[in-house]
Figure (cartoon, rainbow, N blue to C red):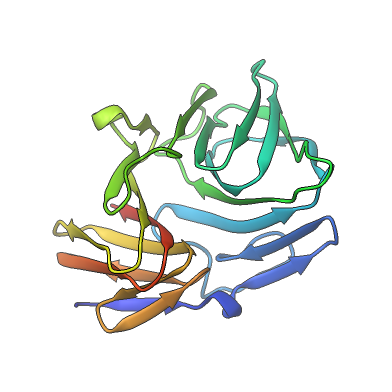
Amino acid sequence: MGTILLRRSGERGHADHGWLDSWHTFSFADYHDPRWMGFRSLRVINDDVIQPGMGFGLHPHRDMEILTYILRGQLEHRDSMGNRRVIGAGDVQYMAAGTGIRHSEMNPSSDQAVHLLQIWIVPERRGLEPRYAERSMATAPGGRLHLVASHTGREDSLAIHQDVDLWFGRLEAGDQAAHRLAPGRHAWLHVAEGSIRLGAERLGAGDAAAVTGPEGLEIVALEPAQVLLFDLA
């Protein structure tokens, strides 16, 4: 394998607010590390656990592509575009904040925490019209990668305002999944849960790897795992 840079789970930024336990892959809020300001257009991956009945009250965003993936539990979403949704495990939610939106994210359960990944991608330009969409991966067949989001919305993926393909895989132990990076492309592989092998490297939950192409990525699940693979310009 060519150039690979590892980002280990335990080296991430961490904030425990009681109601929210959050791990930051890249610099965020009070966590700042000039070595980890993002990767290409990928700016934020926050690994959040929100306690029952708690969450983020109404707050603003602008000029950012925001994707939320639910690992366990449910999240109640409300926004200034008029959307009110409860999303659950396996659901991917997308918002283009564009010229500005306000939204809240609350755990509606009285007894179950919600575990999610919140992902921010810098859009191709500022001042875009806000929009909302979602897609469920809960019943997506395991053992391979599925295209969740892309610049063009091909293959029924969520269309986003950046040259990024987001692939999702749910793998059982022994499953193998491959992805080919084209010349000039870059990959960020995030292990959401479980453990995998990428080349000679073992990656566990919360670990990530940056890869520069052209390169073939071979992912082997060492135990049941969920992975997100970003193919970036």
